[in-house]
Image 1 (cartoon, rainbow over the protein chains, first blue to last red):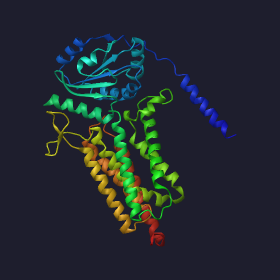
Image 2: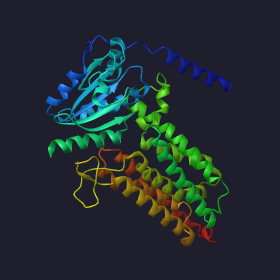
Image 3: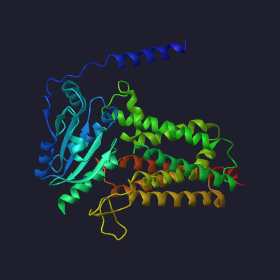
Image 4: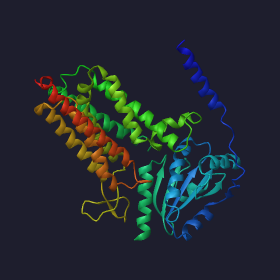
Length: 165
Length: 235
């Protein structure tokens, strides 16, 4: 008899997992395609410290760090520019990811189908990658792999201190 | 790169193991038959698991639809929930001799936390807010000096761990009092170093205050119980 509640709970969990519906992407526009030159030009001309996060919808670690970036973009909205570069992905996958994790975040997302932008900035082909830039496009730090809260907060503090000095 | 967190965990486990060995060699945990090492490791694993689940839920990530994300501990562990779950696990596993088990683990838990903070050396995450003090360390070439805040925390945890262990051996404190003092110290050290850490949203300050309050209440209860039953604490 004691197994029945366990079975019911397990069934409920499996049902919940399987019934996760598709995400509504109607409010998410198509991502603008970009190139290495376009991104470099963007970085050279920006007057704000900039965080560039490279992500893909198929990348599980990217999902894990997305809420951190969402919180950081909300907290530093007026002082730091956030750019997301979606690589080696589809428009539909990218839009679903944005709808799920960044629906209201102040992050400009760009589409890099062939993943050529990160290597041009000095990164590798792996995701996630996060670049931290001082105003004017000076690369302060390149972080490979998943971000944790402390690292993200510290690196943002670093590029903000470069901006004020 | 991703494995640096494992190095930090190794530092924490090393701190735990060394302090337990040191205490055992001094006969400090002789009044507790429970296997403190097993209890501590189980509590740590349960704490990290619950803390990770809490962090995911807090960030709006469904752990049922994204089960693999649970393993990505680096993306965040809710410190308060993790600590609470670890404490409950210790209390449950050591329930037959609760206070000796808690007191037996107190210095080792502090040493483990000290080791965990010292693990920042492997992760390159020791630095905090900017400072003009001479021991400030630059995060990047040309950058401002920063407090090595995690080293401050590591040193404080290790000093308090050794102090509690020595006090247990020489002072014969009331049962439960070392655990209460350790909880107050853990909350206090995190609280006093928190202003030196850049964070998103200010850090889990309320959890640290809660730890201090629970430790203080536990300490008062332990002292009162000893006054009522002084024979319990005689050697």
